[in-house]
Length: 156
Image (cartoon, rainbow, N blue to C red; front, top):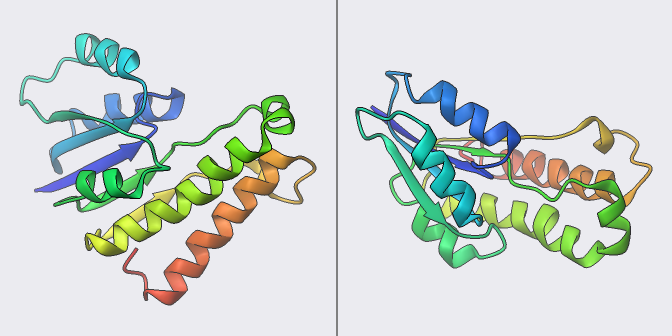
C-alpha cells in the first residue's frame, strides 16, 4: 500500500483529487498539505473516510523544514499548491515568486531528501509563452521540475 501527499490539497483541484482518491484501494494514507486550517476542517467534516486514510498537515510550501517532516514515509506527491490570480501577481510579485518558484524548489528538495518515488507537478497553459508574472513563475516551476528529473534520474 502506498501513501500520497497533495500540496494545496484543500484547493479546487486538490479537493477533487482527494475526493477521488478516498475510495482508491491503492492508497492507505492520503495526506492533505495546505496552509488553510478552515478548509482542512471543512474537508474533514465533509468527506466520508471510513478507513481513516485521510491525514491533514498544516504547512506552507515555502517552509522546507515543514515539508521535510510532512514528506516522511510518503511514496507519491501531487504538487497543486500555487498562487494563481493573474492580477494579484502583478501587485504582489515577491509573494508569487516565493510560493510558485521557491515553494516548488522546496517540494523538489523535500522529495529528494525523503526518497519520494513519484512527484507530479501541476502546470497551466499560462506557462507557455507567458504574458504575465503568474505564467512566468509557473514556467520557472516547470523548468525546475524538468531539471530535477534530469538531475536525479527520475527519482523525484
